[in-house]
Image (cartoon, rainbow, N blue to C red; front, top):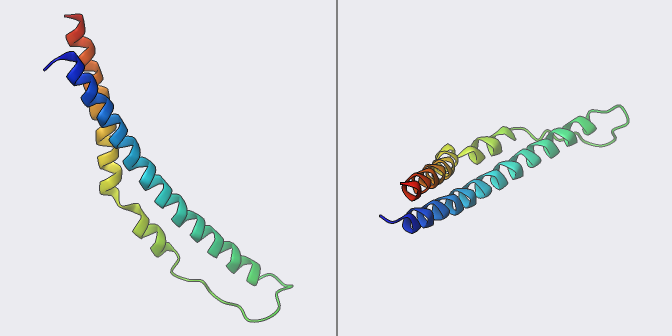
Amino acid sequence: MTVETIKILAALSSIIGSIILAYRVTGILTAVSLVAECHELNIQQLMPNQTGDIQNLGNSTAHIERAQKKRLLITGFAFLIASGILQLVALLVANT
């Protein structure tokens, strides 16, 4: 395997890992934002100046649990780690 091939594999691993992590982080932030908004609404409804019916937005943590998807996070980090290892191998091969 040539140095150029190793560098290309390293770049591809970095790109794939970054895309996967960006996708997962976006999903996690969306779920956390939803849960925070639900929590804030629940608190506002319990304030003394609240008029009207109080609605409990329960089970909002289910959104967080669905957003975790640890396999994708691990896969994304594995690609980034593989990219670093491949870059190191390319550097070592180029110097020998």
